Length: 478
Image (cartoon, rainbow, N blue to C red; front, side):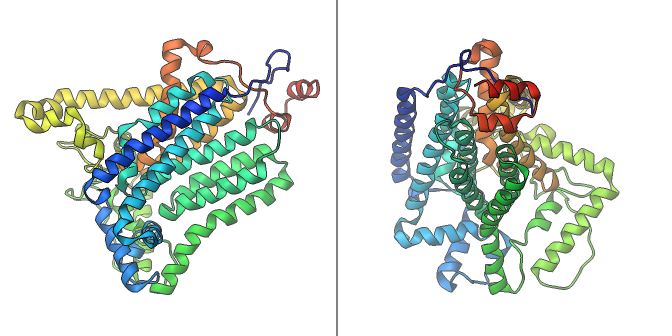
């Protein structure tokens, strides 16, 4: 990963402007209070997410039987979110969902403001507020903090993790590596408690960061510490299931989820009405044994059917990146589990489609499908422009681009192994909007015009980002 580092005389150090930072905070607080008003006026103080009823039922089982309840929902899905609800219920069962959505909204406002504040220290600092606005006011992502579901916490967590890494590599006065490593590791553990698949992408980000910031010997020790911390959360779920059900797994729904997106007649989407799935032999055993058998069966089907697998992977990618409102471009009707997206309740285009036959034909017909294709293609194109714009800048900006894109690609890859559902895009939506914001500014202003002089890169970071002789010479002259 090469880096171009300028001398102090050519690239003076610039601290983030305090008034910009204050503006971010004030705006984030304002958005939070607007959400607070919404929460207090929503029946039950929360909207149900796709799995809302299941989370509530699992929580009720924990209240009734304790944390080692054998309720099927607590091992079929990861028990992290119901356990989180149980913890919040200590503040008052009657205020449980108000406490939940207020906390989720507060974390989301903090995450977006903290992320944007760290971007103020980069070469595209003058567009940090634009990036912040697009993320915090994105209807689907922002309103998901008022939904009973883990997605908002996951999206906030990924923004906080990346912000902590950026804060470390842009800090000149003092070394924040140890502190931020611990904070980032605990944040990865926190979101992995709700959705274990995020553990993979989170650990990859931490390892990349550690290898950049530490020599090999010291990096090994840091990686062990980070991995140990991250493993606490899923390890807790394994211990709970062992005590409650006598099998050591995080959850038992992986096989079913993979099977939804596999098989000769599957379309790759979350579509329970289709004839999906692989015909697997029956085995005796508990839920964990059944799940492992189904996972093995589906994996074998993929290897034995490479051509069909390729078609399904393409379909899953399309459904993963499809718009919230109309992704029926591969079939006759929209597919996925975002029917309860709060944005759809107030989206004027959806209202037109629901209130008249002509609107429905227009929205779901040829024109509507064409617009959906255009929206998805343009979104991916602009995101790619944003990524390559940062990659060409080099230095800290390339490092940020690399870390953020690793999270997007790994979460996308997970959907290829399971099923194509645009709800799986929610955790990385903040990062994709970040790239899209840079892409939009690049298209409008041009690469040279969107970049300003950022702060001088700390020498300890520059030395690890590149091993070139030219860079070492530049560093030694500072």
